[in-house]
Image (cartoon, rainbow over all chains, first blue to last red; front, side, top):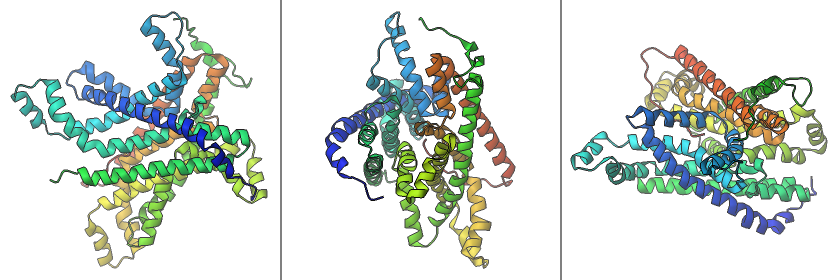
Length: 229
Length: 251
């Protein structure tokens, strides 16, 4: 005890936030947008009456939800180059950067979790509204886009945002790919200067402030957008 | 595609020269389950205690419980494990810190892993216990008081037995989260299932065989846990009681 140097934090603030936090936030944002998009598609597939649509979607979601995120990160890290090669017909696995690989991983993994939220959201809208849409002459996509999805998003917005806070915390796991996200940056400084205690406590405080702050905002929002019934 | 499949790899000798790769994965599974089991004991006992005090009439107890949950929910699990593994030994008195750091290999990562994971999961269990208790009609606690039970007796004989039955489904998914989360312990050096698959991939370059095997094992464990918990839920169910539903938490 006693020989800690918290000055190391101040000296590395630029690196920690400009490189690390920027990466973490970019990854979170891209994965959230992509995850919600694919998650909504998956939810619509799962609720479809066509078996060939609902079965693969159900299988995908259950598979993603039953294996750990770390294993998914490793899977995609090695699989994406092969899928890329197959898509463009190349003979060798293509080179995929760590950033692209982690964006794809988190997008596809979180899509499974977002799809469960969106499925509940779509189911919270009474069937009568869809029938009303059909009666007005709208087709499936129109009634989804104009009637069901806007309400489903509104109902589920707080839960979608809470899941995004979890996603923000989960992005720290890209550490296993030696990527310089916020935790990766803190870890690199910590190892270089032998300041593990200072850097990891600081990282914990920053993650706490961001996640806790966002969760307070979500609570505010929840009160504001609640539909009075 | 020029990937050479070799499913026989599981029966070849692993890098430690004593076990096959198949056994390496099974031993990894053993560490995953052991970590989940020890962490689960902490999570259930501490989580129940925290969930209970958050429903008591004592303001300070509710605040304390809420503070714990917010603290452990808003820091990534990986960072929490780093705190237990790297930071905790430095903050303890020197002799104790050194003793912790000098524990022999599996224990030096196993102990911080299950403590960290247990305390992390306790926050989530406490949310469910609280929700379970609050889902019961208020009259139940009042009836306990009217019968002359103390607060502790009301919880022990009336509220908790019902609350636990209500929260069995979310507790089931929490158990699976717990098992999946043990994989994070690979970052502090525990050779659990994901780490075993990773080392198999690093030594043999049979990426897809190793990860397929790990995936299949996780799925089998999941199905087993779900069925065990369902059987348990049925065997403790009270005939005729259809309790209120409690929402499940995310991963």
